Length: 357
Length: 81
Image 1: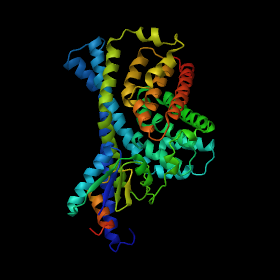
Image 2: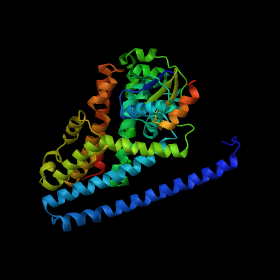
Image 3: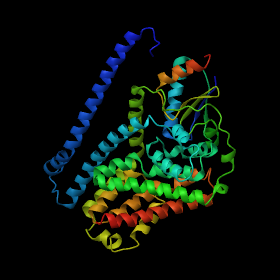
Image 4: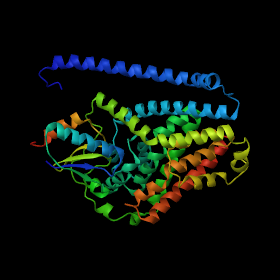
């Protein structure tokens, strides 16, 4: 850029573009804050005064929960996904792999799990990333730590937990997710299950020059990536979101107060494993599950049982296992799911002790 | 010019294919856009985050969906058109 002959002209026009960009961002922040603040009063007014429903009634509170939560969740998602994506555009799977190269197990697992949280990644890339890691010599267990942490501790879950339950449970969730990823990866590494990986993975020769997508991007490109990501994620998850909020609203308005507590409350020692067994085959994401978690929490279910349910849904799913089948033999998929599910059950019990309902 | 899109059918891969076709049309290049959906083949290109764009055997984009104008610039820079 500095070699450009028209450097001075170029400089003033980029400064102008920079100011315009800052102006647009500031405007977006103001609109976001205003919408978030007005969300509650707006729906109070619509439900009470416009629709003439009593907020204490079943229909009234159900309708209010649905409208208020839909707007709140979409705003939270848009805000956090944008910020996280722009920050993550400085990081890449390629860089993560080079940071993991040559690390021993143990330290490697901890680094892999932490990088799983900050590396931009989507489950549709799980298989190419798995091949890219293992074929370049990253140990199997370390690779698994990365692949477990990445969906478990994701920006959507963090955004919604913060908005619904505050920083305490959110921090516990992140910590627990990391511990599960580290321990499960260590266990898989110790079991020496390389023979249950499809052999072609080790024979794959990584050709071509590696392109690091994080390098050489301009701010405009990073912001564009952020906006695109908000759009793609919202477009992908809105059906889950509406179903989740709808179920949440139904529970909120109609379910009798003691129904869930009687079956899955603190009195039932098997509630956590049952929640995990129900959650594993379910395919949804944090945005679809958290409205349900919020409504069930209001009905008196303990946080540990609910978070275990959510973790089981987001970390393990049938479609993901079918994808992984391309590179992992069924016994490794079963072992991997079993180890992760056990970790989630343990975390559920722990949270039930730490955060009594 | 040989152009291929790497990706196993996720939303971003479809978007990248669309933008690439638009860029080719802008440049007036009549090239086939091939699709590589096999994950092993994708990984062999060294791409770990889909989608990817390969021009004449070289990976030029991975892990993001550039706008058509940017792709046009990349295509103009790599191929003799």
